[in-house]
Amino acid sequence: MQFSWVKGFAFGAVVTAALFAPLTVFSPTWAETKIVAIGASNTSGFGAGFGQSFPSQLEAMLKAHGYKAQVINAGVPGDTTRGMLARLDASVPADTRIVILQPGGNDLRFGYTKEERRAMMAKLQKRGIRVIVADNLQGLLAKHSADGLHFNGEAHAMIAKQLYPQVVDALGGGPVAVSTAPATNGQPPATLPAGSQPVQTPASTGATH
Image (cartoon, rainbow, N blue to C red; front, side, top):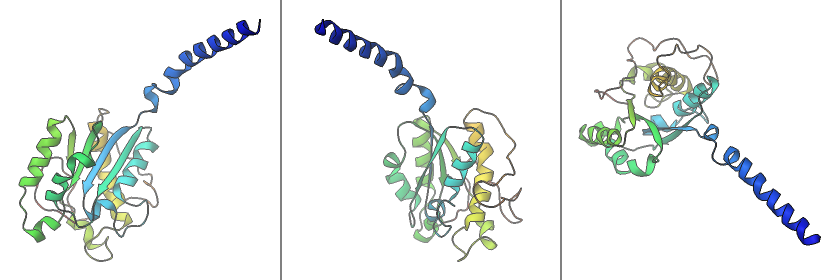
């Protein structure tokens, strides 16, 4: 009698595990879309304060609008596009869907050309990853920097807001009007200040650190 009870209990446990395993282990509702931001100090959020980098603010904005997305910050202070190319495979997981590339002004200091940028874009596109280039952002430094080289939190909020509709479009949601609600702290302005340029998808000239 005891043997039968044990067998019955074991069988019930197996059936229960089989029924609930797909919900807890294999359910796609737990998966988050991976987005990687690659750059130097102005991607890492150097000098902007904890949680104020544009990757962090962009992730908060996406989640606030119902997107299950993780924005990985792969910004390394002092890095160059050549360095980004060298660490590309390590920085971008296999299941990454979008890469936001912010080439650094460090390239200009070391005399590097844009060949590394083109090589990196080609490599990512070959992997089927959508590339968004965040470029021509120098105009933000005039009023949104403590040292003239690095963005403050407000500038990062503005960049996140400009990137948001492009990321949503790349996710297949189509163009979406950007909410005026703050990404994390503070109210991001509706447009970039005079003298700055919008974030661009194709490779272009100009860069920041």
